[in-house]
Image 1 (spheres, rainbow, N blue to C red):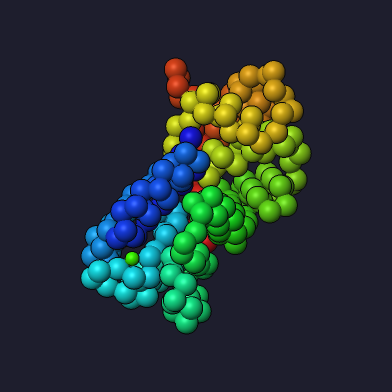
Image 2 (image 1 turned 45 degrees about the horizontal axis):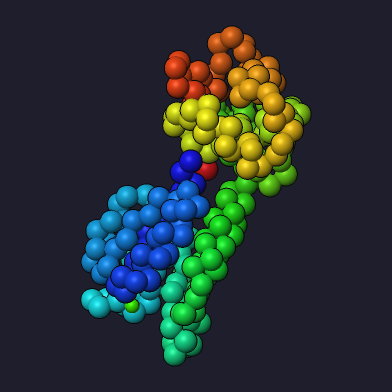
Length: 230
Ligand code: CA
């Protein structure tokens, strides 16, 4: 399953390759840019997080960071060398969310990426759909349907959250099984279909004509609610 898209901006191939490999192993989709220009030309693709080396051949990571911040609050992790102690502080001042000092262990980078993505999600803890009809609060693990609390099991919550965070994206049953196995074992032996049926009974006005979770025949499910503007 795709856990998110990450842009790695780093001119040292050895570093970018190992970071890419570790992140991909964790299910992230990784794009590497070797220069500042390359990075900026990729920005129109939507990334969930950017790992940005401070020292690039053509531009300062700092300038790239400012450029990114002009129209995006995507989480940014700066990579800095030890000798760049001052730049490091500056890195946070110019809008980076975190930094990692070289040499680092790739595992540390992966841990920082996950932590930052969690934090970024927490910042918009409420997602709401269909003009406030369905509200999912990922911080409190609460769901409200027409302003009334709905009680979901942890597995049901995780499934709904995963679908709702990717409106329109089709998930196969196998992908959904992996998501709940990685999270909670309640209902281990039950099928995804049974969970979806339960969720529909809780959040759909007419579970036979679902407005939120659509069946994609022969494939799986997708979220069909309309995200509300912030
Ligand atoms: Ca560099």
